[in-house]
Image (cartoon, rainbow, N blue to C red; front, side, top):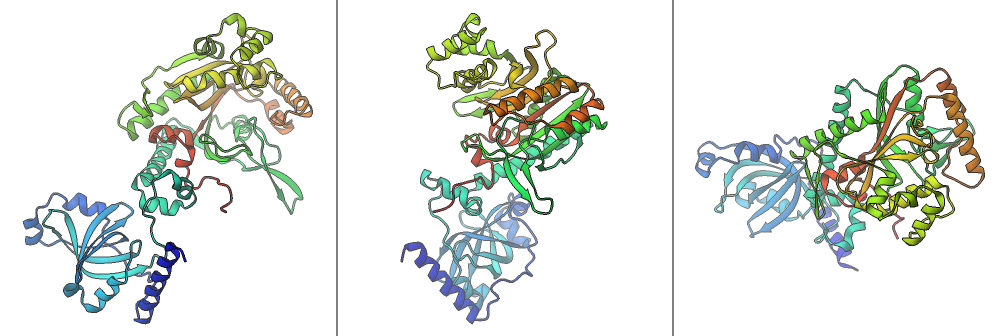
Length: 493
């Protein structure tokens, strides 16, 4: 029998002993009057003589996280959702029966305790317990070492324990919740309407990604978990909802890495009578607002770097970025043959058989992306990798599009929207041919979306921002799994 199993057996024996003595094992009638944070905020500055002269009474509920027993007295730290407070209990105050119950408690047990505040000899604010109840027995021992690399997967898989024992992990997810609230308020203040669009779609579209497939029994049809809400949000522009946003999940049947989880949260927003350049300014405003409210500064620590979010942010074209960071000449990058030769010279692990535009983007991602630490808008994207974006008026081989890079990774993708139904239909047909030729990521034909455009969609711009990556930036987390409560993992052995 291993150590954990032995400890579990001891805890079960204690549970049985408590039950036999008449203790209610899982009561649901205890109501705490305070949170630990309220007590610390309200009484943390009071001296010992003040607490003695005017006793402050309260009751708390939470987990026992530390425990030091001295025979007929003990100290323990009780942790609730807002923090920890030390508790002191004595047999002569609790009474023999209640103290006998206390002696059968363990780390991790959830208890309710009530009494008055005082300060110990070391001046620590402490609750002296006058009464105590077991609210829930913890039957598994808490981990002693939960921070080491060997426990990383266990922390993700057993997030409930991770949150229990690691305060900094709870801080990340509390901060994530605040970031989402700030984003909602930001767009509502600018007259955007929050909407919800289908998660299950008959045609997967809006992004170059493999979908997950499910089946509807009653309709006897396959459906796809959405890879992006884009095409439905643009239908709403047609319907007259000129400013819309959605915060919700996307699902992409792709690999898992420190930057990718198959299920992730995306913000997408669309604004009529705006261009992709307008959205650059809006994006800067959004990130500055979040940084100011979450961090209180525009300087964000990121590994060995400090990211400065002060606007305006740098703007580079794809070609300019490869020239600058890849030591390439404009002449090399201007033709397919030159680009292939450059990729071979650099020994890049890219697919040399793909079209020029796709190859240009892949070369950029391999050479440039990791070096874009400071906020940078990359523009000048080729038409063939942007089937839903508006052509650039000056150069129809390019589209009006940007991607935002911060900390060496993409955080946002935006473009002026294509609203010409005939152009859109032609691009869908080209994508359909690419799918027949074996390109699984090419967009399928969506005839209803073309029909919607035929009713007339106002000129507009739209953008998608990865919320998980945004949270990573503002919490200095290097892995996407650190900002998703329950990331997808391989089956447990």
